Length: 141
Image (tube, rainbow, N blue to C red; front, top):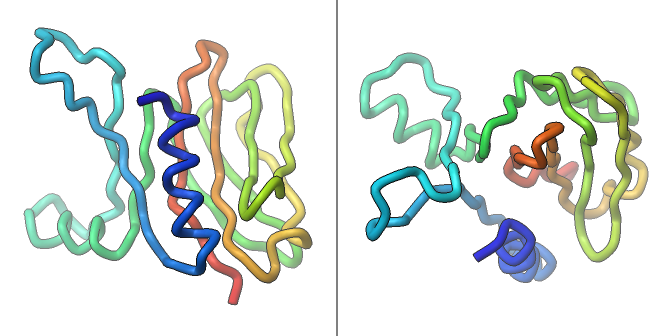
């Protein structure tokens, strides 16, 4: 399944008002290498199993194929994203709501939240090798 297909599968319940999280894995048991390079980065108080599970269950993680998302903050009417060098950072949400900033080696962007006030949004970071990192959805209510 491609990342676009997985995103579409997540959008269906999100668009119906369900608050779900999604995660990346590399479930390639038949291969001897990391075929698609998916994993999650968990925000946890420490590295003990209980803290890591709490972070996952709370949605305090993001999925990646390589790029890092250091921070996502809401400031005024914008979302500010700090990340590893990217070629594009996208904010997307319900339906076709999306805005992006493109560049070479972009490490911080400020994107408007006005189109996402009544719904969810998530952040996608794409690096120069087309590897992606995806935040979980956030709700502004």
